[in-house]
Length: 177
Image (cartoon, rainbow, N blue to C red; front, side, top):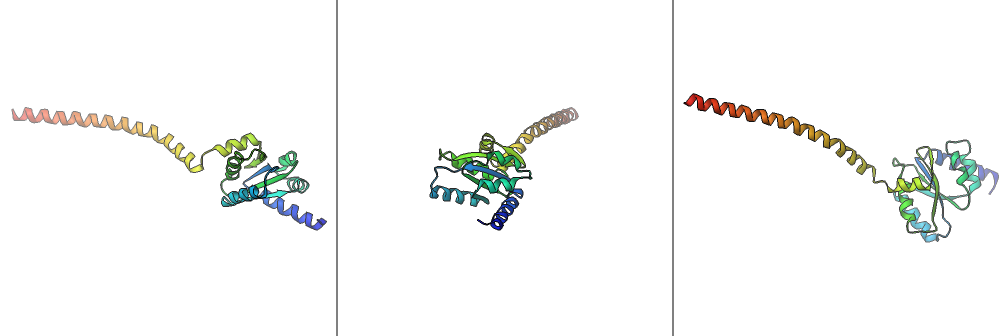
C-alpha cells in the first residue's frame, strides 16, 4: 500500500470514526468468513458498518481525536463496528447478542457518546431494552403517582356530592312532611 493510499485510508477512517455515535472494537479470531458475513449482515440492518482494519492505520486515525482512548485496545486482529445512527447502542446490542453464540469472538472496547467503555459496559448496554421500552417505563413511573392524586381528589369530590345528595333528600322529605 503506497503512502498516498495509506494517508487516504487514514483520513477516511478518521472521518467515519469522528462522525460516529458509537464505535466498538472486536477481536474476530477463530471466526469463519461465513460468520463474519452473517455478522456484517446483522449490523448492516441497523445501519452499523463493520470493517477489519490495520491497527497501525487505526492508531493514526484516532490519534489527536476524542477517540484516542481506543489506542491501547488496537492490538491483535481488530474489527471495528461503526454506528452513525441515532441509536448509540445499536452496535453494542447486536455485537453483545451475537457474541453469546461465538466463544472465540471477543469485544475489546468501544466508545459510546464520546466515552471509552470496556467490554463489561458494552455487554450492559447490549442488555438494555430498546429506547421506546425505557421511555414507556419512565412514563408509567410518572403516571402511577398522578393517577393516585387524581383518585384522592376524585374521592373527596365524590364524598361531597354524596353529602349534597343526602342533604337534598333530607330537605325533600322535610318539605313533604
